[in-house]
Image 1 (cartoon, chains in turn orange, red):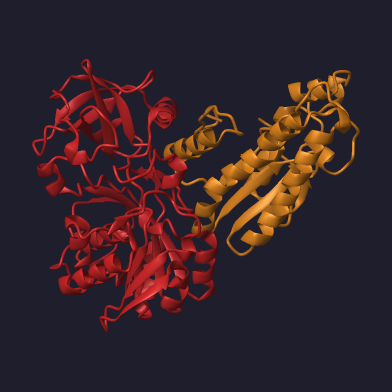
Image 2 (cartoon, rainbow over the protein chains, first blue to last red; image 1 turned 180 degrees about the horizontal axis):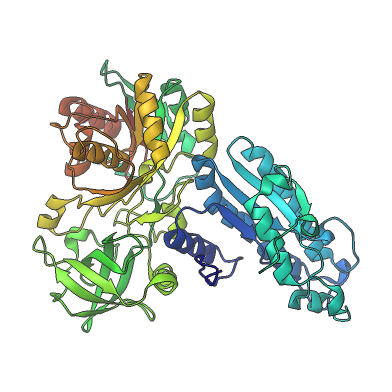
Length: 197
Length: 341
């Protein structure tokens, strides 16, 4: 991003930690000014190898919900109020097909992503008319460590390149209204993007 | 007046004392009544500044000190004005704190493992008012500041505040070293109700400074010059409001200072963008932009009270405060509210 003439900052933190969420939002706004977009892409599978629900510890489920649902919600709460009074903003939840389909052993993760999708729909309904949009995106299966943790036997060549998916996400962020209604869900594979020169 | 010593749960139920500027009539209401007190065509102006973790504990030489940031010399820069306190923390009243060791240009301040600063200048106003330069910049500076800093707070609080206690529901850029607390009770649903009434809502960002330093000479000089950024869209909304004879209502003294200071510097005209004001408002000030103020209830101490005198005569304000005290209104940043309109 810097090579392309943009401004980029990396601020590490634990999305499930309340203090870190406030530190992150404050430092980000100090560095780049009022925030227009928040993309919730951090998440956890919970226990790996993946386990059936009846073998999942409740504490592991709580941790997955803290990272994938409550933490992103807290960050949205911190930044979206200012977006609403300024009259513009975008909240993107990175979802998964596991939010829709009931895949055995994907219980904790799938539940967290389904809950996040629904949280996004309700938030969108509540923010209707403020200029703040909320969308969920399904990035598809990507060649990431997370995917390897979940499905170690998958063929990496059959998986999407995360860099390409990120470009599609950037295209969506630039024009969200072109791809999804407020509160809607988008498969990123359907979002066109410019090939890097 | 009794101080509110901790954030309270349901802000729309906080008390609101309405002082009518035209009739002088006084009414005891709730913050949730605010939308009904505004008229369609009015404009509510918010300070969307977030609050910094501006209190840093550290050492000067071998001595324990607390450095409270007062304001950035330039936004995003490493040079800050700051007030040095001696040993101890917010639990002691600022005027009871021991004096810090004398600081000289070139002295090093150690403020945490990744946060060091050098004293660049000592103000002629007070030996405690310093200009300091942090060694870290950019990501490293802001990460370290948010890791080591705590919110500035005062001795009447029941316990140590977390950063989230100090933010409004619409906090954006962190420019303020103390919370712009007038807006604290304005929950998103209350702002929606204001908009539904046909009242506009606009924002500016004003860097609220320190309200007390414990040094009498420095306290008399407060508020120090403060920076604000008024978007062109807000200037447009204010001009449209005035053109239709609507009322511009400031949420907090910081909004009054930002708008009136700017107007005073340009012959009554509002110029958008970033500017610094040293305007000190008081009884003699003729309000050029703002007609009303929604503000926190505070003790009738010098600077806050003086600013309110631009809105109502001293006698009416003194009477309102005596009434609030008798009725058990709570004071300070987590206290009850007042509307002078």
